[in-house]
Image (cartoon, rainbow, N blue to C red; front, side, top):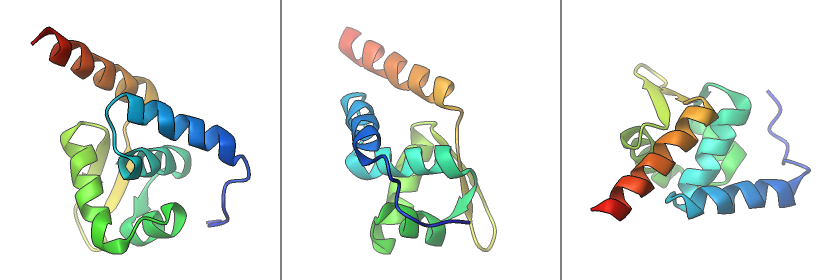
Length: 102
């Protein structure tokens, strides 16, 4: 697995910003995009690829799981996988729509 930085940073930054506009935090957006790009990862992999502090990664993934954006596989080590992007975006938009109607 290659842990080198993404060379197309501005494109990634725009994706992070778009996800933040849909209600994710910066850490959630970075984690989701990384999982969507690399597939199933451990917390150590996710920390290395995103730069998110190890002390925060489980909270971030737990929040993404509550939002229905990631699957968590129990075990040692725990493994995380992103929900298909088309499904994830649909869920985020539906939540925004529902929240605006309440």
